[in-house]
Image 1: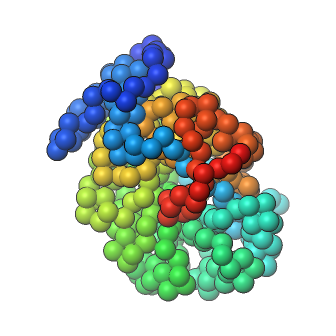
Image 2 (image 1 turned 135 degrees about the vertical axis):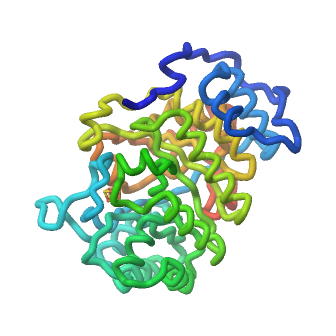
Length: 375
Ligand code: SF4
């Protein structure tokens, strides 16, 4: 059974708003594994938020929170990997199975661009019918339709799958993508970087070692990547800390991570949902964000997402160390299939950022700020 962690054992205490005078992380000291677990499980929520907010303000003194206008048109839902937490994938031949043609993908990206999108996140199932040439065709089609669109394609587990399919090394596949001018890739598919738990929720997906090795290779080639965490399933709090420590160690070696993006398992429509029927409490999300800000002292950005949790949990995350509010997704299918369909407008997002006490600023996928939002 999943350890629901501190939200089940500690009262949810929303104390006074974070104060910039809260004690920052001691200079030159890092949270070790045990101290990090104490943060996640035991430090009262208000105190945890204050410490994380102080660390965030020490790194980014401006009271700005960034967001990106993006779209995630999931190019295929056909997948042969069958992760038990996934409500998105379909087998080939299923009536709801689909694979976009490059032209259709480009049409959707063009439509999002007209609505203001600057970035397209490309992620899809592990579809054995698609090869490297299909991936390159997707990139070329988007380039032709939208020359200035930032393309943020394929997560580490997709690279591992493609390398196996093409009988090439992961490095060779990554270099082919880099040669297309791609410079950032998403850090999806990390789920939980603890082999025992991973084997239970995603036994056929890239292993912990493969996810870390693929990401390290991507950083060495020159890609900037994000890092994700999915919690709220079969993991314990200790597993979450081990996950953070794996990411911190890799970042020490490469410096290639731009941001950390946690999200909770959504049980709707998945096999795992029969075992773990309840989604994690939003207070856990805030604790994970705050713990990550303090433990991942070598990560510049921590994302609190209005989308992956709820708008209000995302807003609270901005007071717990997060400096980024993620994407205003114009198209997304993965969480929609799990019955998670929060919908907000740009006006809503910027209002939430302001209500949390910050100035909203649009960014690109390199986390370069594009100017203050007028909305
Ligand atoms: S999470 Fe990704 S790899 Fe796993 S079944 Fe779903 S689409 Fe396939």
